[in-house]
Length: 335
Image 1 (cartoon, one colour):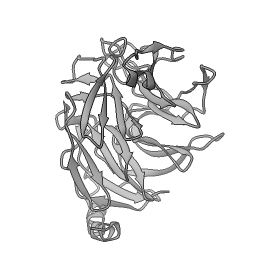
Image 2 (tube, one colour; image 1 turned 60 degrees about the vertical axis):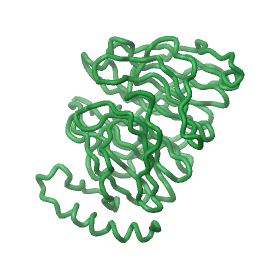
Image 3 (cartoon, rainbow, N blue to C red; image 1 turned 120 degrees about the vertical axis):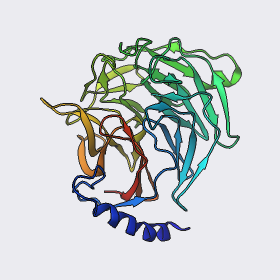
Image 4 (cartoon, rainbow, N blue to C red; image 1 turned 135 degrees about the horizontal axis):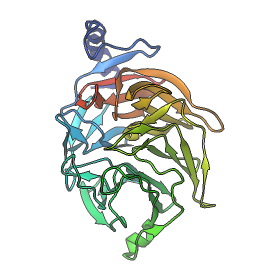
């Protein structure tokens, strides 16, 4: 099915969604974007690892209904609206970021096989063409909810939660992937994160690594932060970036670069003097600019999967109202 046919066939679904009663949890928010509802995901996902390759949206692991960690991995093809299963993760993992190195996906750390405890130091890569996972050198210590970024041939891991699920780590480690292919690599220390936190968005933008928002602590409290830190790998220095308009976290799988801007979709937010809640906002950051709100999601969502493919913004899964995992999916024209 072509995308044009897919768009036509989903208009009736979108209309049905618009006609939901005001008390329905999936009533569309009022905003300038023209959202269209797609068929539900096969399995709802919250906090999955996400990459885009070959105009497909790949999802790895994450929580399913009941806040249960999952090995399930798959991709969505907008060309025909299909979902295709790929090799399962080596174990059920959440709270990990994914980065793309050519046609290989890297991920590190996370919470393994359950919500309580099980912070891990495992590092893996997934070869998309071979549909195969390969183990890599362990992180120097177990971490979850930290940042993972690839600059040149160096993989960076920093921040995140330690084994008690509550202490934020300042540690910053680097793995040289060329050395890894030669069989001699190990993680080396780098400049610590200046304001340790967890569940921040991580992106490489103009050859620098951005740590966007995030929260302090996890089990004792979850204090969303508006802070943005930028690491320059060439000078090995951290600097302060443009702050978010409010405290924000839980958008790791919905933060990406498109058209020379950083995009961040949904998440958790704590406005000044407000309480923590799911966020509907779509934010962008251009070079030398400040954060701009360019639209809203159909519903406030924590930790959805999101990406822009062929001029359309796709949003899948996430949690609505606390930890309620949902399988809804939408698409809309890029604002």
